[in-house]
Image (cartoon, rainbow, N blue to C red; front, side):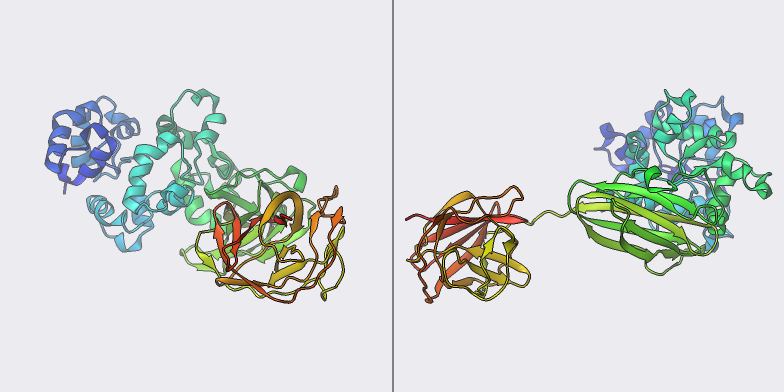
Length: 513
């Protein structure tokens, strides 16, 4: 059974790949393709690349595009020829057992109509889920949109899409290919490079894999990649020379950001630890998905001094596609240098992990009221910071408000004046939260004009003092969080006190006497 133009032409893809045709309906798009687009070499399907089809089938090298398409429809698909650098029908059949009895034309139609949308595996080099994981801006695309994006945009942009092929790595490690664009690089790899044993990724080297596995001597090209993908990685076979460091000082630095960084590695008796370094410019939530292939590996996060911050066992990804254990970890880390240490637990083991970081940004307050915070007296502070204890009478006592482990402080004066100016050098360390809509303050102490800041950033003894007066009458304030981390307390007379809130400190106002 041969295919027809209706089987291989995708009007949505044709419009998306050719922006000048975006306004055409399906009938107009097909007519344009048959009259002009085919001869012009325009892209018309995510499953077919005529340029690649010609290059990978030497007996077709003299055919024009119209002849090529005719051959593909009537012979090429049925013969199992390679149609695209990202579609392998034989691999599709082998990795989807329910399709084992379909012929190639039926496989093509199933992939086009069902397989892509179902997220099925159809090529050893490429997976839709991995492409989405490695490109966070594509998180909302469905599977068909993901494949279209890679074909139309992602290849040209040099996006990461595979553990086994990296555009920049392939170009850098093969100087004779330095002038090829990304599409040409991918085509070269699948047509020539994989058969020549060229290095295509830090994590897969066909020449290395063949040389270090004598039972694979008869395999070549894409069959080596398919063997590792289906068998070798689960058997603990090493696919490339070591990428990880064996010590902290030799650990390669991983790029870490909103996109996941992917690493595929190997540990065993001769490699008891694989070290990787990553750096955080600010406090962040770091997420790691770590899988041992067929067996678990140990994972430790170390700080810059080599001290263990977190230790756990990875999840396990099995050859049948199931996952056991828990591969995921989210951990809050401060700015600094960190290391991942991956260790074997039961013989030679391949592993892969995904790593990203989300900066911890203090949420911007809204103008809505914030709730009730009970007043609690804490001790006064000096050069050694804030002490917690019973209230003390006398000069320099400060009224603190506490909510759990968060603290805020207000210096009050003897008359309860609630109109304050701001002094940038009046700093008290600590954070606070507010719940409810009303705060009651219990003025207890004197006011000071200024607390100088020492070289260590902590307030020293006050330079100016006002005599101590005790006032146990509570003052109620409505509280609201404004933009730019400003807390405004307003009393019943409409007088407002403004606090500037920071992550580690906040400035408090001084009274206008």
